Image (cartoon, rainbow, N blue to C red):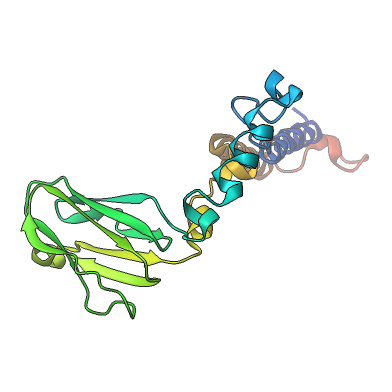
Length: 224
């Protein structure tokens, strides 16, 4: 093969590898059920819940419902599993007025003992009694950070934290962001293949030049 032909071929392959890398799909995630583009008959005729249902005439508009509509905020229940030597989740962010329920699911004895350094006005006493089975719950009204431990297993890292804040929803939204939801699904195998191919072509091209040197077809016209 002539060196010039080889260089053209190698350049084409390298360009294809770069194009493959750049062509990683960047698409917005669509709703699985197609709700963004379809309207049911009830919606067109004005008989659906979105028009005359709970959203306009229901509890949310009249301020009779729970949560932010009546100014109480928070509400609902979050669950923390008390397993052997760890709490799941270890860190929890909630709004004021939210109830946290601890459920014992391990085999060893554990407790939920709050740290003495609680937010001012808080009265959380926890569940200092050691048990192997059961439930315990507490409603958090005062904003701040609550640290707690399992006394017998604090040495192995059985600790937990509850953060009570009005911005709990925003913090949870940031923590739960899925990169696919941003419209940038990353195809790792395509990137890996393209990178490997580019490196391989560069290696072959370099080897060819070192082994055969300059091609006779590109030398001086008068040179034998």
